Length: 203
Ligand SMILES: N[C@@H](CCC(=O)N[C@@H](CS)C(=O)NCC(=O)O)C(=O)O
Image (tube, rainbow, N blue to C red; front, side):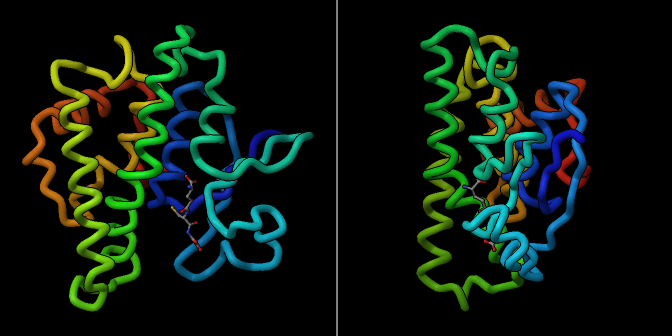
C-alpha cells in the first residue's frame, strides 16, 4: 500500500501536493472529496482530519498529515526541491509562510467564494473587499520578489515556487488580472515548461 491523497481537483492546496509528488516521481492514490458537497465534513473524514479540510496525505504505516505545507515539506525534505543550504531553506519557509498568511487567504478565498460557491461580490460585501485587497497586496509582493529572478529561491524551482504557483496561476478566477504582473506572468510561463508540470485539473 502506498500514499493516499484526499483531495479536490480545483484546490490549489491539494495541487501543491500533487505537483510535489509528480516532481519527485512518487506514486499515489488520488481520492476525490467533493468539499462543495460537504464530503470533508462527514464523521468518517473528520476521523482522518478533525479540521474537516483537504488535502490530507495518508502515509502508509504511519497515519495522516493535514496542511498542504506540512505535506509538501514531508515529501520534499532531503530532495532538490528543498535547498540543502540552511539560509536558502529559510527563504523557502519565508515564502511558504507568506503564502499561507497572505496570498492564500486573499486569492484562494476570493476564488472559492466567487467561482465555486457562486457568491456575488455584492452579497459578500466587506468580506469580499477585505479578502480581495489582501490578495492584491500579496500579488504585488510576489511580483517584487520575482524581480530579476527566474525562481523564488536559488537557481532552480523549489517548494517555494510550487506553493506560490498553485493559487497564483489561477488568480484570474478570483478577478485579478495576471497580465498586470509581468514578473509573475513570466514565472508562470517558465513553471509550465517544467518536465513534471501538470495542470490543476489532473488528479
Ligand atoms: N491551510 C490548509 C488549508 C486547507 C483548506 O482550506 N482546504 C479547503 C480546500 S482548499 C477545504 O478543504 N475546504 C472545505 C471545508 O472547509 O469544508 C492547507 O494549506 O492545506
